[in-house]
Amino acid sequence: MIAGCSGSDESEGREDGHGDSDGDESSSSDWPMYGVDLQNTGHHPDARGPDGNEVTERPLLDLNGISFDPVCIVDGIAYGHTTAGKIYALNLETEERLWETERTGYPIVFDGMVYGPTTDMRVHGYDTKTGNRWESEKLESVGGLGRPLPTQNGIFVTTSEEVWRINPNTGEYTQVIEIPPYIGGSNDWPAFLDDTLYTVRGSELHALNVETSEIDWTFEPENKGSMIDSNPAIGDGAVYLASRDQNLHAIDIESGEEIWRVDTDTRVEASPSIMDNLVYLSEPNHIIAVDAESGEIEWEQKSLTGTPVDVIVADNTCYAASRFGIWAYDARSGKLDWKYEIPNESDIGFIAPPVVYDGSIYVSSNDETLRVIENV
Image (cartoon, rainbow, N blue to C red):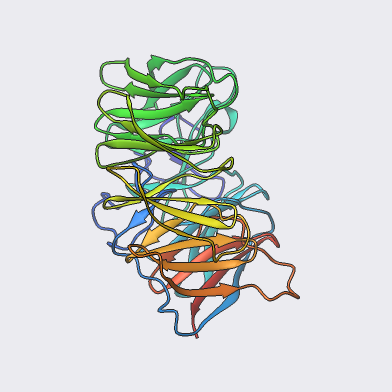
């Protein structure tokens, strides 16, 4: 296969590696990536979940593997991956599997393509409609590739000590910037805004300008607490991030200076979400909503059971999923709107952030199944 050209283990593809979509035709309720958008806000103003009067849960797809990541949904098609080594496309209306690949990697949908796998030091993408495969040139680097982040500026991917930009038409790559090595690890998903990539290396958050190839600033907590368990979220002129020093931090996006921090009283392995002037964070048996300007806690809820994965916000509702069920709170007041609790006799548990789409919630479970929570 020629780098930058479409092909497939299944069928032939287009030479430019892109599908028919121009990136502007998708539904307003689409959920194309982790965190909803490139800023990792975790907030979708137009997505709508169950009304909560009476909800039920049912299995939707046998995954033949575990997935701790949320699905992506664009134009009624869900894209996911599992430890079985496949990416799949599922029509949510017909509940039929449209295609699947022989490679795996968390999918992110952009401009008619599903990017994800980074095997053999290449980034792989698939046409959303056909599954036809595209691949980049081989990156001459060691230590493996991070998750690809497609933007209007190109596809960005990190290695242990560099950031690379890949041309999605040709598959060619260029080095953007050298960065500190990730001794102590790195976070899963960088955030991106205004030509700047925000990524974590151990206890440091770096603002990397991909046009000037400079590090604009670096933030590190006072006690050098690692931040690799949390993905940065951008909103209200700040970057929000939790750290192992048991704090939620707000960092000025221009200067890199800390604006405020909130003591979480426990180590948090979750990422914040943002809606308007509120920042949401899940903790074991606990959710807090913090005023984005002042750092004051606006509301907190301890009515849920278990340790939620990342909370998400849609249609003015804050959703949290854990091993024991799903809870839906009014995003502004914190009032419990409804909950679905997994029966005590059941062995299943939810293990990924929920995704809200067209009146339903989609979430994977520990029995290798994609499940849907919907109105009865």
